[in-house]
Image (cartoon, rainbow, N blue to C red; front, side, top):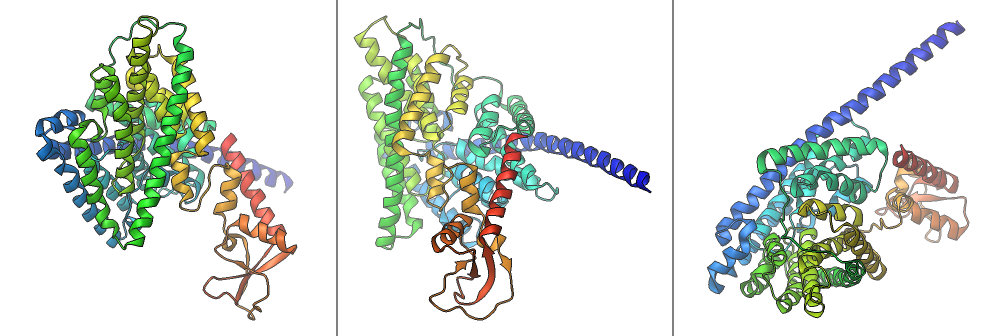
Length: 544
């Protein structure tokens, strides 16, 4: 009898190992499928931007500056206003049919929230509505980036494809990261950066079990994109000449400047967004009026400075080719910061990474131009510093120095800037984090009540609710008004703090709607046990 039981246990153990291997293969297979599907989604997204840009400016997104310049003042400023009206209509319909909540688009912060707080699910309707808002916004000239919406679209596609496949929570998080990695890979033709972006920004996790599927998705997306769009860097910088020993410490100085510029960008965007919301509430202005108002302002700015229109990659190319004077470059830094802050605060769709690259290119080219005038032939050309500035400002805004560094390498195909770029990105990120304390995405999440800057243990304390861990009981006798109590919606961190303050072993739990009727009980021991289990699960996931 004992031998039979032992044989049965051995058989079950072998079967379990085989099933685990099957699960791994299944995740890898779906990672490849998600990578290809996300790549086609990004290609379609870019196609939509180009078509709208052709209608608005008579040129694709890659030539929007030339198109706007040829239209003249009387015509160029109208496109963002009309685009704002269309965005308002889409937001109204999406809000009415509950595709998008609160009349706002979605982006990378929503993907991070789905991974950290939710069940790694993103609504397909919400994803498509957000992508439509962003495509109209960027095609009509709103100053923002396409990579954030692309990442959200890739994660949406991943969430849709794995919805009915029986994946567990960890596997769904991994596949969500696959969608994000594929989107970055397809957007930039940057498969290495796509992997590191998903690990660094979306998952915050470098476990080996996660790395493999995400790499497979990123490679799959790169193959699809290269088949349809070709294999070449987004920017082809001209020859930047000899690099001198002094250029490395000078790049550190550029990193400080870029950190301060990124800080200006973040603070202006944050404060203008908050200010616009407060003024709209104070004067009873509907959010539907904000996009056309923002479009009017951005349109008037772009009529004089078309470099602020759209994603801005043509402006980067012009800056790399030395087509702007130093004074104009400095002016464009402030104009692009202001235009992007207005765009995002007025509920247009779009991201912040492309504006960061554009602003960084302006800052770096101006810095290099000043050095070239002060010390001719003693330092590298402005092209060299423009590429470094792209990475430094972009990385500081995202709070993702590793993936940003690789994105710049793969965007430009220039690996000769390695030392200076890494140093500048690190210093710029340090300066921005020292002043702002958080990245752009963490600020967005903090407005929704989540602080992810404290790491996994802080997320656990914020996301587990009292209702998830309490001992349920049928409604009992009403509590007196003076009695201490917990509410079902409170977080585990709030519950532990309250239990510590009142020095009780446990407290009754009530609903917010019936604040005097007990529906459960939460003891200090049970709360701590739930916290410890969640910490162990997080540790296993992050190290296996």
